[in-house]
Image (cartoon, rainbow, N blue to C red; front, side, top):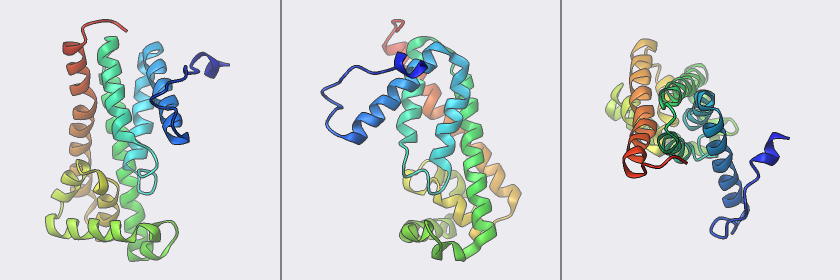
Length: 196
């Protein structure tokens, strides 16, 4: 089995709880896969960015930390970072687009359906942020962790037109992916000039 090859060694700093061990195992798997198969960075980054941008899932997966780690691994391993940037851009565009569609389709009914009613306060904050900043909230929300997934949802709830939403979505996704992947890759190449 391929998983047996990636089985991590015990780490006293991370083995203090189930979630720490799970995230540590996930990090080691991402690192080993990226080093062994550089072009797998595209679907890996796309899946991570999608989960970080899709409403409801973003709270479960530490996508920002995983993308920063993937960028650092790419830099330290001297593998091209552009597939990961492309994948993260496409994944985050798709996650926001689907969140926007859910908000557009269900409007304010979303606040009364499971699982969204559990995040009513967060959605209300996103709605206030969107009404204050308008279309710029799509761009700004991408760089604000708690609002990243809720702003596209409330943009749909507020019936923002498709093309202004999609332009802000695509531009912010490209810059966000570059910042989270290319900059750590560059910093790692400069600070750690060894090949892992």
